[in-house]
Image 1: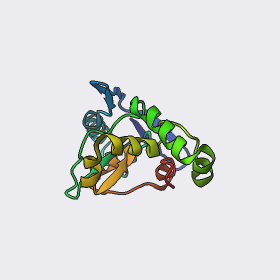
Image 2: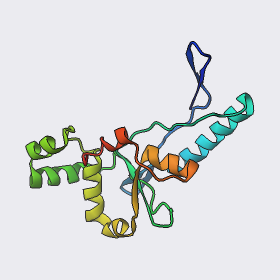
Image 3: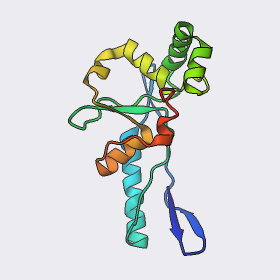
Length: 166
């Protein structure tokens, strides 16, 4: 976690807190430990506020292809799956076989990679379509962390373009 400070001439970056982002492995699945990350971020914010006083603004930068599904009440439906989850490679093969490499690339301009949101959603639908049926929003990881911090559900443009849906 970094603290940025501008003195009118230069922008300084200082590491405030370092923490692990270790995926949870449950059976043959991999998940983001998003609640642990959220707690670490809150502790980092507390450290900065205690040491440096008022915080003017916050930003979250993170891997953007992974996502959490939020229901209409604003609750996270399930832990977000990790981009290295083994199901994604199978899903990519199936989607490419159905739609074709050229078609996918021509439509999205995004490199075909099993980590892409497109393949993760396809795999999720095959595995448990009920999760999608109760979802109101899909929030990419940085947007999900912003939501947990401030309550606003939004999609940041540059992150959205990484999904292979834009």
